[in-house]
Image 1 (spheres, one colour):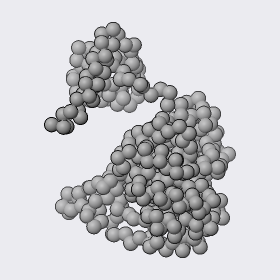
Image 2: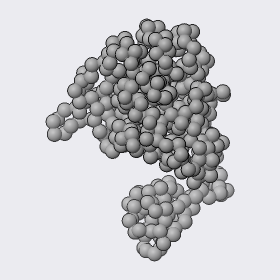
Image 3: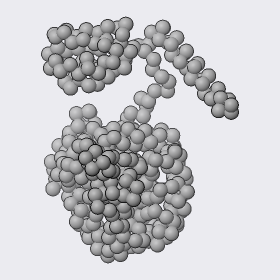
Image 4: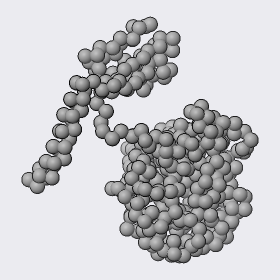
Length: 401
């Protein structure tokens, strides 16, 4: 069980939609929050809030084998919404979780008709916040309009990374009165084949499923950064997708999220691991020089480049840290790097300054840094910018033909 007294580093408490959360972690709608028992266990493990399984007019009937492991950090699923009756959520699941002290976010989907039938009952059941989930923007906005007009608790909208411009949808949600945003939902449809059975792993009606876990984090990070960088006055943003360790959560905080969604990590590694993540987050923030989550929020935003940084990379090698694993050589597609221990050789005429060699070094014996732009590289940068402008100008004309 999570013990606040064991938090020895930075403070990890946050405020979200007016509520004080014991940590920034929010367990997303999924198997971990199947009912009050699951939600209470997650709260006791240290999460700041729990999101119910998505409540709809009818209970879901899931096919056999609707979840599968892609690898140790990713899941494929064709699971639907809550598989228990909505009245059970009003009468038992939500009230019991609230009584146990959990901050409960009621997930409601997926149509305006369902929002009209459900949101007020979710509020009456004791949920602190409502999260609206839909498959399309044109459905989500009417759901939001109705909810804002008929409930008195905060309403947030969950966005899909499958939409053409989720950040633009976020802006519309804020304009329609959303109190916050969750970005993003699972990515899909996706497919995995069982080579022994010669058939799809998922037993959905088309064999496809939806992917969660580490592979979707870069997509979610991009969308969340677009929201924080391009929407003045954004608020209550929780980024979700691929948070498997403390540093993943810190990445979301550094681009301006004030809470972080988790799901796959709790399924694959258990809620005991989520408890450890809370302590690790506190320690890691302190190592980075932060005394609280608030100090870390948005610190990466001023450091986004405004133009391409066309220059060379410098490298530093410490033989005392080198394990002679050879990974830096293996990943160099240009054969520019050679370890002749205790020396590291680099052929500058072959090196393209991609930086991957330093990124894969397990002990940081090899590190990289960006050198100041030379006059020659400044000319290259100008030429690149001119070419990009030309392509942008000519593309519509080319499409006309």
